[in-house]
Image 1 (cartoon, one colour):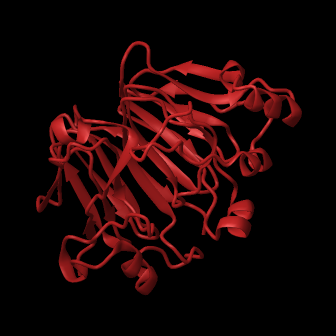
Image 2 (cartoon, rainbow, N blue to C red):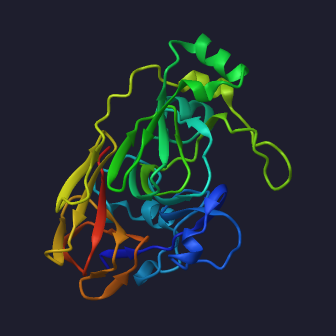
Amino acid sequence: MEKILLLSAPLKERIWGGDYFKNVLKVTDSSSNIGEMWSCSGHKEGESIILNGEFKNKTLSEVYKKHKELFNDSIKSEDFPILIKLIDTKDLLSIQVHPNDEYAKKYENQLGKTEGRLILDSKEDSNIVIGHKAKDKNELVKAINEDKIENYLNYYKVKKGEFYPIPSGTLHAIGKNILLLEVQQSSDVTYRFYDYHRKDKDGKERELHVNKALDVVSFDIYKEEVKNHFGLDSSILWQNKYFLVTYYDLTNIHECSFETLNNYLIVSVIEGEVMVDDKYKINKGFSFIILKSKEKTKLSGKNLKIVVTEYLDY
């Protein structure tokens, strides 16, 4: 029985997408604006397919639902709970917010969306939005109605290696010319406050969801710690009720091993290429799953940087 699941990575066209997936990763010849690669996904909007072993050609969600004992004996989640994305932007994303589990379940029949972002590359003037300056809902509504919401946003100039936690309810947006790894709950629920009056390829402005966004947006001050993790051999990027995300730089030691006696791990390659148990090679940008196993899994490679995600909400 294989203890490794190699995964396909669906690509997503986005109005703000760049050319990283075509020109750097070379995973597409499309001239479209590809903004996202879902490197580990059990979500119906873009599922990963298993590429090896006895589950080859099955979807991740199918394997998860039928063989939960291979992932964790205490699983409560009916659907695969984590979504890992690689995101490339050449333009601004919409100003948006994600709901918590309770609201998303009631109105969308999905999970809520807490997410975290590791900046992999950016330009000197690249920034992201986290939070706002509005005192209350009335002030925020006034800003939206007067097309002045940009005046109320909190901007953060980003640098490679920084990790930004985005709990559900946090107003946020990604800026131009940023490459990042996103670890999130497996949800595709996004409520847009504002989208710069952009039009899609059909000449229509994208749908906004102002009422729902106002229902879920937080007015608390953003208090999450943001720090730079590059240059460290290993570092916890973020731990919350849903997942533990850890960064490893194997440049100096060239190899490490992981135990998965009780819980599976998702490994995302952000630099270099990794050999798994001297058997499988996984390239930069892709993710794979180490199933629950009594055996250690060895990872090796030169100039290798990885992010390891463990789901915690059991």
